[in-house]
Length: 567
Ligand SMILES: [Zn+2]
Image 1: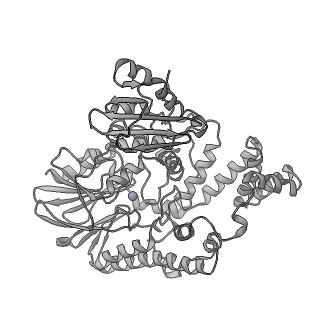
Image 2: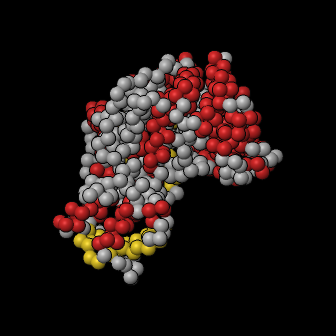
Image 3: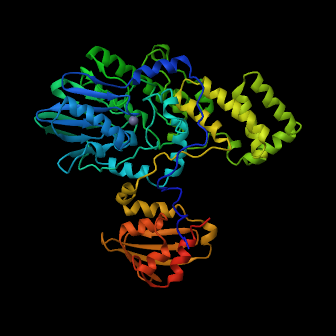
């Protein structure tokens, strides 16, 4: 009786097999994307005598700053294996212990390699006060879909050596075979700014919201060295990421870059792409970067106020020539078009203002009507085929939407769709779009297997706050299974001494972090056992029989409760 193994199976798969039956190699990339790969040539660059950047080992750089009889690491790469590889190179340059690790923000490519750099509790792990919460969110309620869309965007389905580059690094190593992520939570947190002396070196940290809300930058006055995290790199910024993200505040991002500009750095060492030297050079590129962000923001708002829709704005917005031609603003990561749509939804939400989009006919119904109107499936099919032959790939792709909404099993249409996606991917110099198209084509293959990107390890799950586990539980409730159910459970954790009340009312699970009287079943267990039962790594009946889960009251209620999560 595996009552619960299904509950979080999509959230927490252990040891997933990532190998495909057949390896698919993507087509050759456009020449400018190939040229951009030079930015990520594997090497340790010594920016100055005391500052070294490991670039090309991971999607993100890892940076070492030497102090007196100790060193500081800024960002840790995305996996323990990559972290160890980089650390051994750093240790060769400087054998002193690592005194502090600084996370510029919560993203996995900056924090998941931390275990390789943190030897013991004497290594301080420093981050913004909200970073921990955001790290937990990566593993939280949206993990399944962000995972899927990230896999497409980074091309995780393809062999790593076949990835031309991911725009801000060579390839995303997280989730690839033989690579493990680690989770080391910050031990020192700050709000607006923090001044530290680490092994005799003065370091200033500033909160600088931009690519993420918890973003910080590091300033070392002695060297006039600035480490901007992901608020600056050699590509148009990801003001919106197609894997999905909460609104990224463009106005705040501009302000953060301005804080950096007025410090007048001599060295700029980003967490992606190569470092830049020279105050004049740095000032020019930071100014162009903040101007591009402000331009997209301001011009989108201007067009919003004219009553234009996100689609119309995206079709109109164009960076001025002097910004477009900047080598730091080439569309190798974000694009002004995607960004403007994000500004629109950030300010006004999903409704584009057109009354016909308020309550439209469903996508499926629209497809049926368009097919009928145009004279049947064969008409649309031959138009899609013709568009493909005429290299009008986007239109071919959109026509296959109608055909597949109407009949999702149509093999011949899928072939046209696959070709259109492959051509669009092959032509695209933006790696996010390129791998999203190519991965979507690969997904249409019968041999396709989902890559296990961001699969948390056992250690990660054990460390995950129990509150997050309950959040995940809530969004896995199947309303049809919970219809007319009114169940009240209480759980007491013997190790953390935390108590929770779970009240299932029809289609809603209320969870409160305290005991509410009147429960029909009471459970006592430790947090790890509960997580293991919920993730299906421990059987509920066996746990009850062995007393690992001590249950008093109505056991049928408990089984009924877990059945509510079964598809
Ligand atoms: Zn990053």
